[in-house]
Length: 88
Image 1 (cartoon, rainbow, N blue to C red):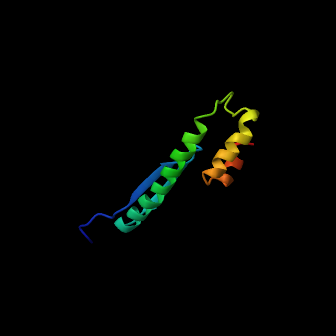
Image 2 (cartoon, rainbow, N blue to C red):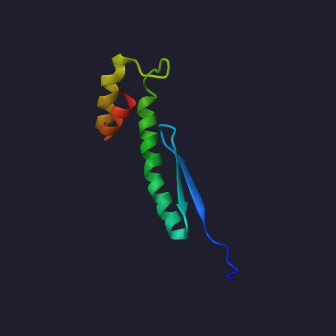
Image 3 (cartoon, rainbow, N blue to C red):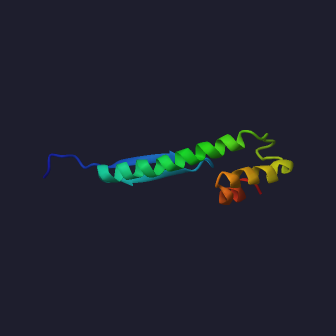
């Protein structure tokens, strides 16, 4: 038997929609890759949250009069596919 304990880390990330993602890493190289991958998601979710925070929310939804503006602003930031999920 080895004296070294097994390396296993679970990296958890909560996206801008509130869904939790768990990534299991068995070695340090995979942990570094997971952190680099999640860093990209964190920067994107910060941008999306900044854009959405400019608009009012009523009853958990954005009013219909702002839908077109929100979609255009998300599309110019490069999140056109995300806008379909956020504004219906």
